[in-house]
Length: 192
Image (tube, rainbow, N blue to C red; front, side, top):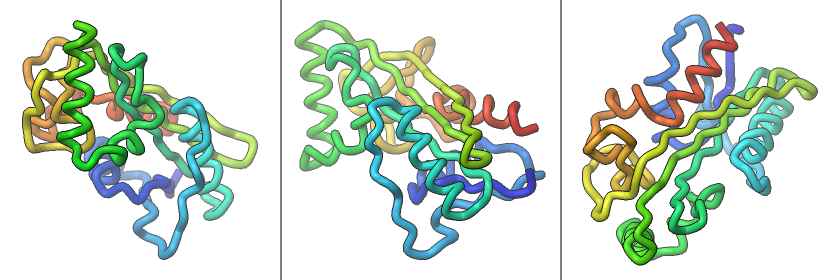
């Protein structure tokens, strides 16, 4: 496969994908390569469903194999929320700090700091051929935001067997273990 479209405008995700995707055989385009492209509404109730909505739309619009991801942060103390609403959840608060404080307060109240990140990548080769690749990393909620790297919930997530949050790790270390890395590795194995 000579060309693939990564259906995303999210510059942080694009940077992560470019660092993780090690094949130089395939050229990966993203939505920033095109003008005025709207993303479809994520109406799915699962990460896989939302990723498939985007990859199907991209494959049909550009007539090339397309992959898209949907990722989220799940906190046991919040019944695995924010989950598929992770991006919208942050926007409900005046700042990321306020959202983090809300999560930390609930983790303390329920005495349960278990959390995990999930990535679902949908690859659409043609209108009838979709494949889903899942990645998950378990960990816990940090009781205070730490670190400057990464994005989203990275300052409050500590992966199992680590003492640092994702935001305290450099991108190289995070990308070795992240949920996105797990899913992208499965995608690469399928493609190559």
